[in-house]
Each structure stands twice: as C-alpha cells, then as structure tokens.
Image 1 (spheres, one colour):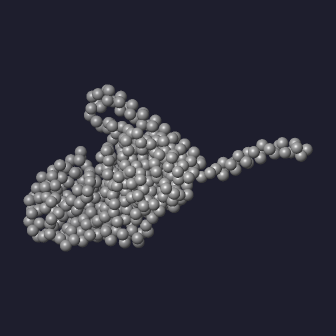
Image 2 (image 1 turned 120 degrees about the horizontal axis):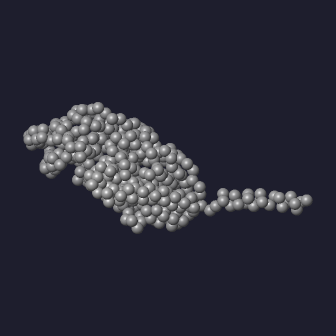
Image 3 (image 1 turned 180 degrees about the vertical axis):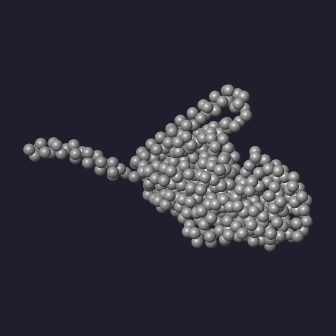
Length: 427
C-alpha cells in the first residue's frame, strides 16, 4: 500500500520539483543582458552608479546636451542596428548629477514608417502614391506588432514573465499600460499602444515604483529654478542651463521644444514619444492641441502642474513668470520675415552693453514689425526664457541647434507673430 501511495504522490512531486526549478531559475548576469541587448550596457550589477559619459562613450551614443544638473546622449541608428532583437529608431541615455538615470529606446512607430501626409496634394492626383501610403500603413502596423512580440520574448527569456504596470513617459497613451520586468534595481518597461509605437524605458526600480514622479521635491525644484536665473550688467535677465535636444531626421522641432521644457522643470520626457502623442495621423504633422493633451497627464504624474495662461505678450507680464525661474512655451508663427529680422542683428545683440544706445538701434525694427504677418503653415512653438525691461525685448529659444539657444526679439515683433497661446509648468 505504501508503494501505491508513492505512485500516486509521484506526479505531484515532480510537478512541485518543476515549479521549484522555474522559481529558482538562475538570474542573468550583466554579460547575459549585454549579449541579448547587443550593446555593452552593463559592466556590473548596478548601472545607476556609473558615470553617464563613460557609458555613452562605451555605447558610442553622441552627447546631445549637458547642463549642471543633467545630460543626454542620443543616437539615431541605421537600419542594420538591433536592440534586444528589434530595430531601434531612437536611442537616448539620460544622466543626472553625472550618473546614468535612465534610457529610452523607440522602435517601430508611425512617425518613421509613413512618409506621406494625408493632406499631401500629390495624393489627390496620384493613385500610385495613395496605394503606396496605404501599403506603408499596413506594413508599420505589422511591424509594431512584431517588435512588441520580439521584445517581449527577449525580455521574458531573460527575466521571466512580466507584470502589468502604469508609467508616464510623456504622453497620455504611454501612461495607460506597460509590461514590467525587474532585475537587481533595474526596471524594463515596454509600452506598445495599438498602431502607435513601441518603446522601452530602462529606469531605476525606485522610479518605476513611483510611476515616473520627479525625484526632486517641490522645495528643491524651486531652489534649482531660482539658481538658474542670470542677471547681466546690460539688463538682460535669462534662464540658463537649458538642455538642448537633437530633433533628428524627422525634424520634430515642436516635440523637441516640449522635451527641453519638461526636462528643465524636472518632468521626464522623450521627444520621440511626445511626437507620437502629437501626431494627427500616419504621416501627419504635430498637432499642438493633441500634444498639449498628451503632455498634461505626464506632467501631473510627475508631481507638477500645467496651465495655459492668458498673459499679455508684454515685457512686464513675462518678467513676473521668468523671475520665478519658469520658462514659457509660446505658440507663434516662425515666418521667414520674422527670422530674417532676428538674424540680421544677432551679432550686434550679442555685443550689446548699452541699453540706451541699443534702443536707438531698435527703432527701425519696431517700425518694421507692423509689416510682419502670421502664416498658419509656419505655426511653431518655442520658449520664452528671458527679458530686458530697458530695451523692451524678449529672449526666445528654439530647438534648431546651439546657435538658436538664445535670440532676442522686440516686444512689437513678438506681438506681430504671436498666436497668443502660452503654456507653463508650475510647482
């Protein structure tokens, strides 16, 4: 009878043993992770105490920006690149206080996949182009599904079955649902909104546990913002230490500007994900209203407040906000005439030391501002980051490269091209 009892117990015994073996599966080593990723990301079991520049150099990801508080390194790989078995379109490594703070990788997405806008006049006249666009849409939707499966399989084979979680990455849709894998204080978060994009974030588990909330307290953030205000002898008051973002081959100037502003205010953001939040459709341009709606969720989740403000585009009104250390997102028309006016005096403005003499120089510019007109095809967003009360000028910053980090525009010129649309992130 004992033999019979053992016979009946054997299946349960082996099932328990199998479960124990699965539970006791060996954790992957840093070398195992690197082999699966296809990059020399890890040298030990803690990425978060590594120097950000050293890791970026090892990965061969070019430096994009460096400020006193943070840094970023961004690479746009070619079609032969693979990360965990799938093709990445954008790879970013972020640093805080000199150390690695996270990575963001975007894979298949509708922005890169569809080259023709639905509003393209050529589509109305050319059936071949319409068929090509339709084919691109079908292809990218299939690729998104395939990348999701590939990345899920790669991470599951390394780290076991994922759990479901929520995490804000800079758009409302990304905050809905992610798959999560954890390894020794590192969390891998895979997001794949249907027919939108596939993205992977690697963040400290403590950040994932708070779903992306800012690491800085309100008091620390206020102190940091005030410390960035530069007051110059010529009367210029400017917010310094702004991150720059490489808008890349897609020319995502508006999402790039939003990423700069959000990061400046301590809100994690990836330009590529923001671009997806602001896409009106496959191959379409960035929609300001959709982008605003998408970013609000991420800003709130990070513990900040966002608001559209009805301020007047006058130096005194702007000064009240800048004096708090807060930049202003400004919706405007970046016309050729407007940019030519700023470009014509940029060198002289850089050398300005006498506000009274400079005011004399600006008299003609103020008169010519009456000729400036808005143009819906040149709708744009930039940041107002400074002012000069003596010369009645505003300092604006665009995401077109270092030479556009700081440009000065008269009050009259700004009013002529303004959409009267303003947005701030507050503490």
